[in-house]
Length: 318
Image (cartoon, rainbow, N blue to C red):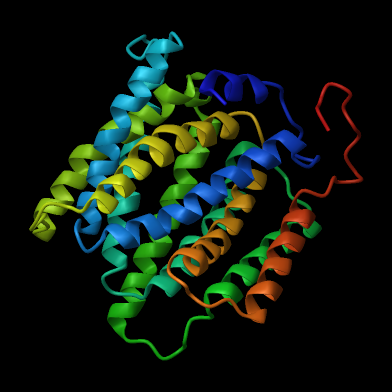
């Protein structure tokens, strides 16, 4: 599906009181599968390419993809449309988000980081309530909590006995999740929502490049040997597909649908990551994972359950 077709499929407004339409749900599931495997792609490439340099290569490779696709679609990247300021703000947050996450991973474990990163939907829900006027019912808030509990159960509940460095890493990852949420809210609540998805994301990717480059230099990261063919293909997957395509689709959807409900679907991402690890790295799956998956699905159902207090709008797709 082309970016133009995807953009066209999400141009009609959707009421917050209604669940996402089937097409949006299908797209979100595809995004979550892609992002879940992306976590594994980063891990598999680590022996050849350090994490901050991976993020730098990813942004550097994705930017030309977005420029080419946008050019073919007639996007005017340099047209004055009042998106420069919010675009720069979103770009600064986008770059700092990955600096916080990758730095936090040097202090805390991957399982703890995964749990704390997916606090992002809570920040989106709070921000949507405060700044975008979106209202979630008690049932929908309960759905968010249920989905988060499922993610925590699937990955492993954090142990209470941790030292100061681990706590610092946890806070950094939570900060990364908060910046992820803030970027979503900026894209939804400013002039960026009127820009083409390639332009809205282009700001973020372009500005993240010097930020990530500086962070890699400060960390002393370097590539010690020629990466393997597998690592190169995984870097291409991250740059071309994950950032160059799926992030564009995400921002196209964020501009139209409820930010809080879209963000709730990201709870599924680490579950797909566990499944990918099972088939590719032969990690074990347990009955606990099955229970966790049911919790996530039940939570997403509650978040997307239509609010009976909201009168159906005939102009809104079901």
